[in-house]
Amino acid sequence: MGKAKSSSAQRRRKEALRRRRRQQQRTARANADLATFDRTLLEDMVEELKRESKFPVAEVAFNPPGQRKMSQLMEELITPYRDETETLEDFNNLVLLGTLAWNIGLLPAEERDVFLKNALKTAPRALRADLGKLLKALILRKLALFPDDDREIIDTRVTELGDRYHLAVAYSTTGS
Image (cartoon, rainbow, N blue to C red; front, side, top):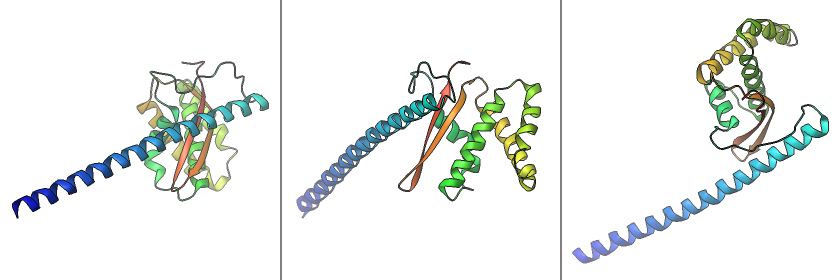
């Protein structure tokens, strides 16, 4: 009876180990697929920027070594407000506000308030106060979390991938 229990326990451990390995292989394939998707999306963004001449794109580096991905930094910046988004459009709007806050945070301190006031003039009156508070909070968060990161965000793309959103960020390294 002792051998039967031992043998049964060994089989369960082996099966659990096989399941774990299969899951690791699936995760590795999914990560590779996502990396390819991310690269393709960023390449498309750069080509569109070149075509539309929104931004002079000379040389492009994709996820340069030694720098955290801007999409990760943006996710971290907007994290406190992430749960308030229910739809792709909500999340995209939050990313756009995060982008505006990030770039305003790059300005000299004396220019930030003027730029923010001018930016808020384009918003509907009923939303200005709340948007102003949110943008100020995001600017302060950017300055606290990433005070030395002076990359300027030039474009973002949010894509729905199953039950989650994927964020790609194109940025300028001219200030870095």
